[in-house]
Amino acid sequence: MFTYIQITQRDSETFKGYVDYKFGKDKLSMTLVRGMKTLRHIVIPFSEITDLTIDKFYGEDRVNFIYNAQKFSFINTGYGESKYLQHHILKATKA
Image 1 (cartoon, rainbow, N blue to C red):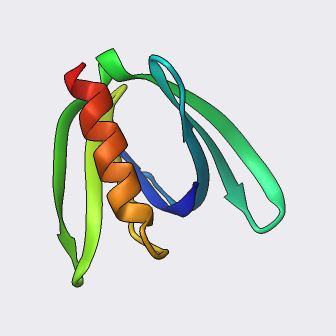
Image 2: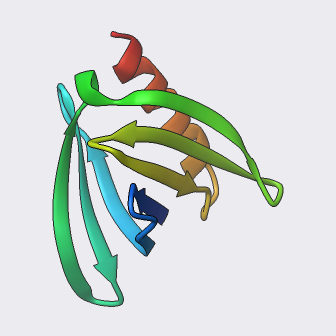
């Protein structure tokens, strides 16, 4: 799936851009992209995700969690995408 993401670090440095993500057996795999350029690949074990919240941001669904002292915020950018992300991340982190 493809959506907008914001990653905030402890020092307040923030990445804003798009991410191509997929769910694996025990992990969330993400590739950060800007235009046609791949910036970096991140693999997050579900067992290391903390502080999972789902809320609204300017009327759009947003999924937030903490991993490795960074806050990841996924913001809905497409039809059905946020429900897919919410369903899968909730299922994976409660398993």
